[in-house]
Image 1 (cartoon, rainbow, N blue to C red):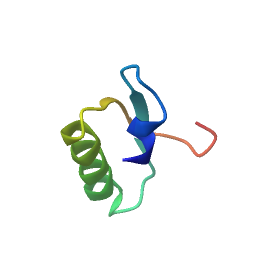
Image 2 (image 1 turned 90 degrees about the horizontal axis):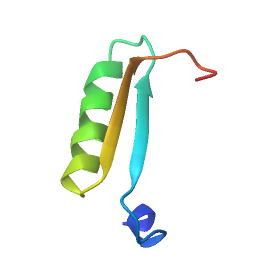
Image 3 (image 1 turned 90 degrees about the vertical axis):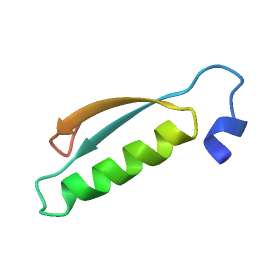
Amino acid sequence: MWLKSRSKDKIKVVVGRDARISGLVVQNLVISTLQSSGIDVIDLGLSTTPT
């Protein structure tokens, strides 16, 4: 995975979503994929665009 190849340290990724109906499904898919790759995830839940 490109992201993991860029750093030897533990990686953290912040994930947020918008209010679309599919937002929660996509967010869960992204979070589970990142976590299965050994990446720590900070879940913001519903977030505004500037976030």
